[in-house]
Image 1 (tube, rainbow, N blue to C red):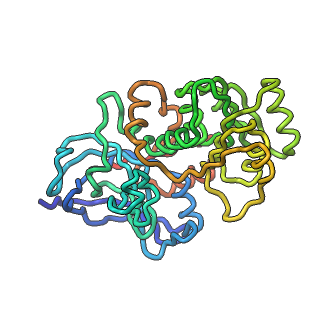
Image 2: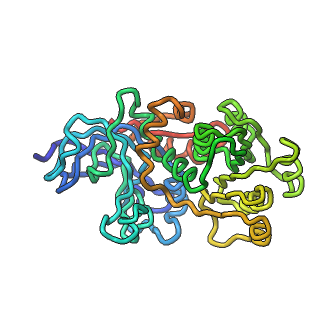
Image 3: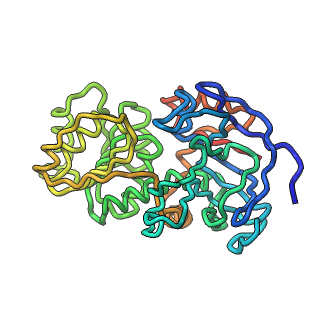
Length: 352
C-alpha cells in the first residue's frame, strides 16, 4: 500500500547547488523495506560532492539525494522479507553488492564491481524522510542503542574494518593521523582491541584537545613541521619503541609519508583516508622496514561488530555529535560541516 504525504529530501543539483524539495514516497520491492528515516550524518564525501559536484568518476549529472550515515524505522516490508517487520529500528548499511560475483561470494562485497552505494551518483541517498533499502543490509538495533548512535555505525564500521585489515592486537602501539570523526573512531576501536598506547596527530588544536579528552595517550600538532622533527617527537614519547600499527585517516601526502617513515619494522600502515590520485611516498622505507601497507575501502561484514561495540559500551560515539539540524535547514548544516572546523565534529540531520 502506497503511503501519502511529503517525502522532504536534500537534493544536490550540482556544485554548491543544494535544495530541499519534496519527492514521492517510494514503495518497497522484493527483498526491500520502506524506512522512515530518523538520523543521518553528513560525511566528508557528502561535502566533497557539495563542494565539487563530483568525486573522481562519480559525477552529479542529475539531481541526487545525498547522505548515507543513517538510521531508520521499518514501516513496510516488501515481498520475500522475513528478517524484519514494521516497527523494527535499524542501522542502514548503504552499500549493496550484487551477491553473485566472486568478490561477493568471498565476503568482500565492498569491492563488488556492481556495488550500489547510497548517495554515490546516480544512486539517491538517505537525506530524506522516507527511503527503500535492501532488507538484508538493515540491522536491528538493541534497545540501548539510540537512532543517533546508529547513524554513526557507518563511520564506526570503517574503523572496525580498518582494525581488521591492520590485524590489530592487544598491546599494539598505534599512531592515528587525523583527529576527525574517522580518526577518533579508529582510536576508539584500537583501544577496545587492547592497544596499549595511541598517538593521534592533526593540524587543528581543538580537534587534538577533543582527542586527548576522549582517550588519546599522546597528541601532536603537525602543522608546519618537518618529517624529521615529527619522527623525533614520536620516538621520544616511548623511548626505544615506535608505533607498530598506523591508521592514516587524512588522505594527505605528508601524513602518508610520515606513517611510512615512522612505523616500526614489520608493522602495518592502513590507508583509511582517501586523498589525491597521485602522491609521493618513500617506498624504499616500506621495503627496508618490510611494512605491510593495506588499502581500506569502506567495510564488509562490519556492521554487527560496530553495533555490538556501541551496545556493550566499549565504544561511545555520542561525544562525536556536535551539531543537529532538521532537513529544512540543510544549507546551514552543510555550511557548518564545511566551515566550522574548530568546533565541528559530526553534524547530523533529524529527518522526521
